[in-house]
Length: 492
Ligand code: SF4
Image 1 (cartoon, rainbow, N blue to C red):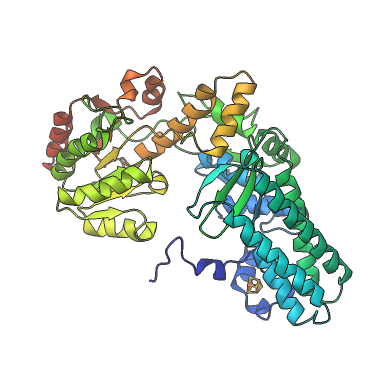
Image 2: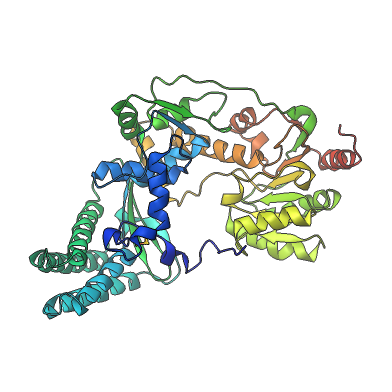
């Protein structure tokens, strides 16, 4: 099987979007795999899709321009803790230089074929493309993310977007005057109308309850607005048609209750049920919160983490996930570890997630270093994964624009942002990471959370109460002994 890296340049060329699909004009319309799959789904009694497709369908139905999924009587969401973030994206809007450049290219193409008598349109599209590229050059080449409300205060940004807006308006008018000449022209007109309206929304930065943020890659800049809460919108969706909704996940509860999730989702009259785990955590696992480790902000933290991890990794002969909250620490450890161990190391980012996991299982004694995507949705059962080391409590970076906006909003409402936003989010993420260890009734292993704040800060109690009932120790020697006995076939 061939694997395509997640950031492969080939992917945009095999991705169908509302902007690039030619629909009935496509020469491959009758053979199209995507349309066949959609048709099958429309006639099925049971459809299994990921969260993104569900919300894409909802967004499409909202516009009245189509649908991807059939009408449903029952909706079951697994991994429901992910919904608030994923749904926020679909209830928001994006405007990117890339989408606008694609449109300029398609208009140029139309001018070379169906609109040869419209040299003015080609020139305008060309000018628009130049303005868009210049706009990206206003920011440094290295990718960055930040608060769009703040950036838009800069005069050079205001000027660039006002020029882009003017030329978009001009192009829109010319396309409008050519409506009906061909489907391609009509399609370009619709896309321009849509982009104009998106840009207007993204420049109206005074609206409250919304996070305005931007992101750059080496070549592109994109603007986003994301609603801070989906509660009202989701409540309206649930109230719209009578149907049953089920939300399940091993990590929906915080501090033993579902209030955080139901509030975020606007599920005011939901019935909740917490089921006990079939795992005997107290026997199957041991949690180590090491006693003598500096705070994560301390300069010595990386070296101390390495010293802590090495004997555990060696004792366990690999079979270990080393999970990080930042790429910086992951890279540091990926550079250091080979100087101290001969065990095979697999590092996130070197190839696709799926291939890394296959190698991890195949190698049997590997150490996998990962961030974000390895904290959840990874299922390695048995002896192959019997040690999980987490570098620190996964509080989201305070630079994250969406988090900043949610914190700001909580403050305005007189609510403690740490208790209402940051803490529950970190608890859910930690529970996900912890959940990688015990995947079966026969699994055993050691979990290490190398963050003293679990015991030194009052909020540590909320984390501990939310974790499975593992036996705990502060002594690394006990963890090594647990692993020793575990592999000798007599777990303690
Ligand atoms: S109809 Fe199918 S093959 Fe044709 S452009 Fe759309 S997605 Fe691609």
